[in-house]
Amino acid sequence: MLRLPEKQEKAWLMSLRGLQVVEIAEELGISKQAVSMYLKQARAKLSEIFLEIANLLDLSIIKMNVKSGILIGDIKQTGERVFIFYTFSNGPIAIFESVLKVKKCSEDTNCMKVVRFYKELLGINHDDVFKALKSILKYAETI
Image (tube, rainbow, N blue to C red):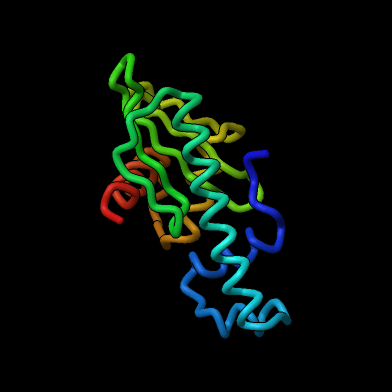
């Protein structure tokens, strides 16, 4: 399965939003040790998920940041850049660079799930979906 277990996913998201271990522990009503364990397990599981996706898509890995839940790779056969984002409750979602060229990111697509998740997370205020997506991809490349 290409998803984090629920408790790991909650702890990971809270960490991604900048909360410290003690704050996550208080919010979830668990010990700091349990939070640390969940975060460690989440990072290990995200590594496995990303490596499995890279293998399935035959990617050359450019960057993998499990703490942020982002993998960037190039498809070996075509050279196209692919951004894999782990999103809360949706799991990993691939955004192919060609989406920016064809400008297809309708409301019911995985592309929009990534845009909604990261607009809120990063505080992006662009109403233009493709400006927001460009900001998100730039963020992915700089972390």
